[in-house]
Length: 251
Ligand code: NDP
Image (tube, rainbow, N blue to C red; front, top):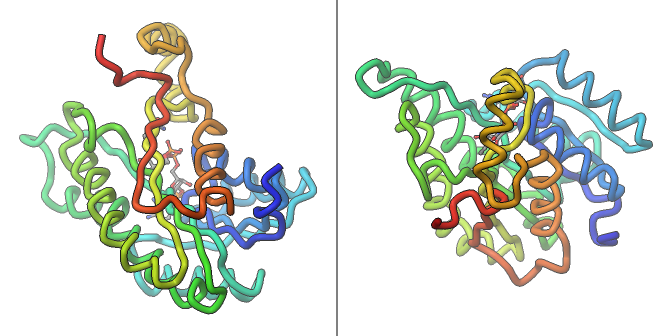
């Protein structure tokens, strides 16, 4: 067990579903106190029930990570619940697909705001808490799509995910004065409700093309985030790690 996680106040944006739910589960199992931040109430309630069933301390707050007022309110709610913020997992994201010829410019802005601007907004809102605590941790959920590979229909998504890594580099230098690290996890194909909808045959074909012969589990991302959040990773900042079962390795 990573003892440095016990009792820590952890915000997981997009914690109501998929990878965020997995991150929340992994941190809760280490004794962290979890704040789930997502727009929808129903899904967040289901995660709360699960986390509390594990014996964890957990709360949820409705938040739109693309909206500054909403983000500030979410961080204040975390302070009210847990007394501060120790760890921010900036994970919320959307991935609507549209090739450029069909892509509405407004949709480009929506993806950028949700996936990229949100990193800036959530980190900015947490800085006073990191400063007060004299330390902090930020983990971004990026992707291999954008920084490493392309995928038709995802120019906006890929740009937002590559942009997160650009943000990360300078943010790591600015956050260092608060003894705070920021790193990114870059998932490959991770099994979430969305992916399950593609059907078993498709998922089997995808899994067969991956060197480790399976799709990722949400906990695979949670475990990488957990390491970055630990005291043991205290000298690592501005870095990214690919968690993809070897998917992008050359033939
Ligand atoms: P899901 O669609 O399963 O979950 C997305 C989560 O983000 C939900 O909790 C959703 O809740 C929340 N969310 C979406 N928009 C907002 C918003 N504006 N404000 C607050 N919360 C929001 O996605 P995944 O778990 O698959 O993806 C999570 C992250 O991982 C994303 O950043 C994604 O890009 C990244 N990723 C995923 C991969 C995969 O294979 N699944 C691969 C690579 C990267 P609600 O809608 O209620 O707000």
